[in-house]
Length: 153
Image 1 (cartoon, rainbow, N blue to C red):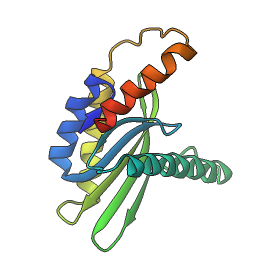
Image 2: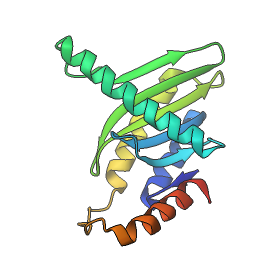
Image 3: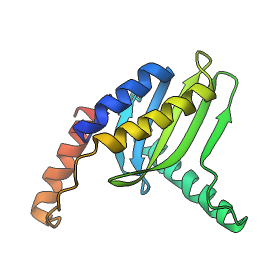
Image 4: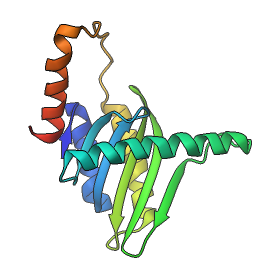
């Protein structure tokens, strides 16, 4: 498991052990990865985060067209894997979870422990400190530090 913010680790770790999820991505609504578990390649993480953010955005628009406030979560079941995608609010803004689970768990358990994880993330989030402006001279260093935290490179 890799996280950009240390306070995200314990709630995500609990979710992983309780839900038996195989792959998890936590990202901002723009698709910026905050934490990941189970992905072997950085390309897979980036593709999954972009697709997950797009799915949530398009689903929210369909809900709006239908006069619904939100659909909450989206679940797809395949022959051996299931996919759970949901947006949720944190003190740091709206995030998206993309969870892949196998036959050793159920979507009901994933949903139950997902709700607990969201509550734990809300409780664990430190007060946000104002960030300074993103400066060109710091950009490459900050980007490399984030990539190293997520992918170990």
